[in-house]
Amino acid sequence: MDRTVRERMTAAREYLAASAFGAADSGGDVHETEGGELTAGELATLTSPSLFGGGSVVVIRNGQNAPKDIATEIARYTGAPAPDAVVIVAHAGGAKGKALVTDLKKAGAAVVEHPKITRAGERAQFVKAEFRRVGRQANEGAVQALLDALGSDLRELASAVDQLASDTEGRIDAAVVARYYRGRAEATGFSVADHAVEGRLSEALEQLRWALATGTSPVLITSALATGVRLLGRVGAASRNASPNALAAEVGAPPWKIDVVRRQLRGWDPAGVARAIRAVAEADAAVKGDSVSAEYALERAIRRIVAYRGAS
Image (spheres, rainbow, N blue to C red):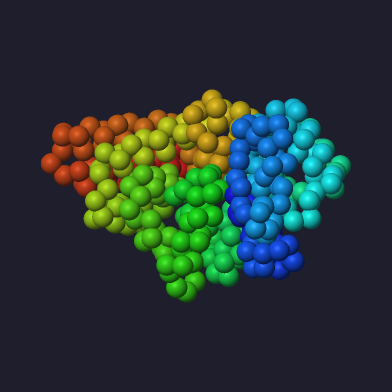
């Protein structure tokens, strides 16, 4: 949504700069306000011609918070806008302030809708679209690596794509993403855990050595391993028909992670998960002082986790 607002602001300023409203190339004055802070008559003031001309662009953020009388005023203005003013209203969606959206549509406002993205597959498609937007090629591994590292925050995912596009060259794959985000200790630990519970021993050990070499604390890695195997147990014990959103609240993980864990459960049985949990508990005690080598304790735990996957 933020990007759409910025794009609309740019387009509005270009329109005003190219129009003959008394201040050529000015792009107009820009006013930003919150829907909940807008007062009666203020919109008329913000859209009134200035002394020097040039028009104005008014951005109303969180329009859903506008009081009923202010929402009515916004919709009424939309029906007969000033020729040298552009009003942009951002609305978070949902039931709150829904009448404002309905009234704006009736008044003839151009509406850009952003359906809420909740499924892992939808987030993957979003990331792919972002790479296409910036004109870069990225394979499935790169998309999944970004999702694993950053989770479900669309703003952060979009920003990450922009950064990767500007700071890297060539085709983007999982290795490129991993190198770029090696400073994210939590993401590194969870990458090790994901490889381990999926039975990918060589990748898990490679990530482990790389994580330790770049300064990731062994405690963070055991914490990530513990989270990974415990989620296997919690999600595996739940009904397969439970929705990710409902199950997320029950197990304490975001909905996108539920979809990931359900894929990771292939090859696991309850006994194997229980043994993996014990292996991680032993590794946790070892890295906190019961072992001379934290690296050895972590590698042993990873090998045991991979062995327990698929074992009867």
